[in-house]
Length: 169
Image 1 (cartoon, helix red, strand yellow):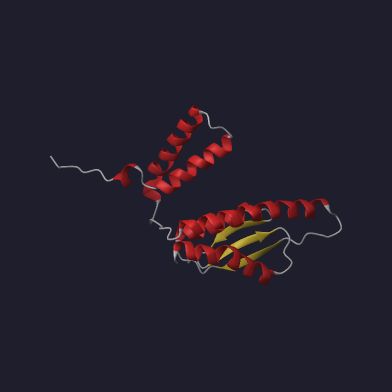
Image 2: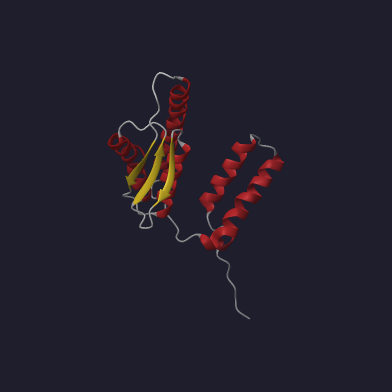
């Protein structure tokens, strides 16, 4: 019989993702009850554990403190975008100009690209619609597209550049 040594990664394959899922669960249920914490822990462990075969690579965050700054900027942008989209919708003076934009990706790390696409989608007024097979272009839908070049420059500066630093890619 083989001497089996168990590596902690086998039982907790994605610890940061597990922590993220737990925090997300607790925010969604708006409760710190013991039962919710236990349920959140169970889900936060089960989801990464049962999906580990689908994870292609392990991304490594080289600057976790920069991720906190990124999250703060993201939260502020969500708040600002909510106000802007609400104003654009209730104000009939200006007609919305929806459109699609092909955003050229300079990120190469799959997880960093996923965070960028999620950031764009979660920010009101924009949605990541498709990523090209070669992972060089992200198709975005924008609620009110006034200046495509300015939007691309803003995403590159506000989101993609910090993600390159965080994941060193």
